[in-house]
Each structure stands twice: as C-alpha cells, then as structure tokens.
Length: 150
Image (cartoon, rainbow, N blue to C red; front, side, top):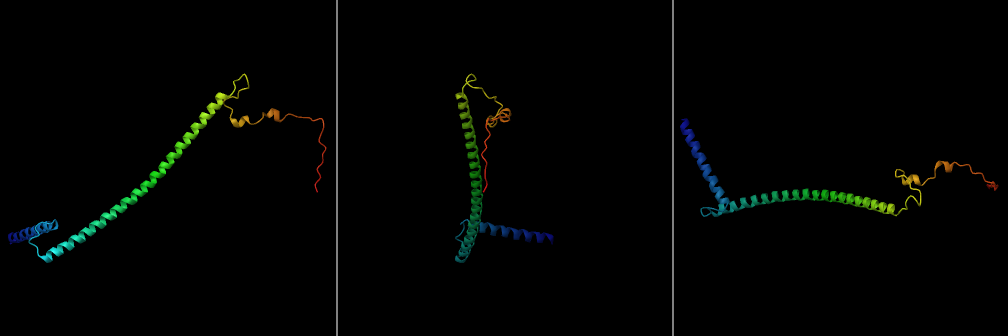
C-alpha cells in the first residue's frame, strides 16, 4: 500500500521534472519545433512580460544608483571646496609670514633705533606708556574762550 503511493509520487515528480526541463529549453529557444503556434505565442507573451519586468527592475536599480552617485558627487564637491579653502588659507598665512620676515629683514638694527622686545605685540606698540600719558602739563595761559549755547 505505501509502496504503491511512493511509486506514484516518484512518477509524478519525474513528470514534473521533465516538464520543467522542457519549459527551460523553450525559454532559452531550444526544442521549439515540437511546439504548436498557440504554444509559441504563449511562450512569446510570457517572455515579453518577463523581459518587461527585468527591464523595469534594471531601470529602478540604475536610477537608485544614479541618485546615490549624485549625492556622492555633491559630497565630494563640498569636501573639495573645503580643502581648497584650507589650502588658500594656508597659502595666505604663509604669504603673510613671508612678508613679515621681509619687513623684519628691512628694519634697522639696534644702533639706529631701539628694538622692541619680541614678546610685545604690535597692538601694545601703538600706545604711549602710562607715565607719558599721566604727566601734569601746565600751560602758561589757560584758554578763556567761553561757549555760549543758544
């Protein structure tokens, strides 16, 4: 009883395997001579639908890849601009340092003028010492001009 059931199942599976193998041959364009015109048209319709789905999926994947690449391009351009700005800043600083070195080499030595200590900044050199600013200056004549507000 079980032996007969398994024989029927095995026979059924062999038949399904043969049908699938024939279907695969037909899909790749082999063994078409045994097919009727109606079967050929049906196969053609199935293949066209399959190709349409394949093309749609391919286009979807291509558009997604293009979008990713465009975002990557924007990121790279932004990073490139950042690097250019850093290079320009570095060149500007280097140029300023070279100009300062040239100016320092053109400055007179200590015999001609009093040198300023290196720790003193340019900002500090623009002001008079406190002792000169607080000096009491007495003038012989006070200005007696009165302002009259109208």
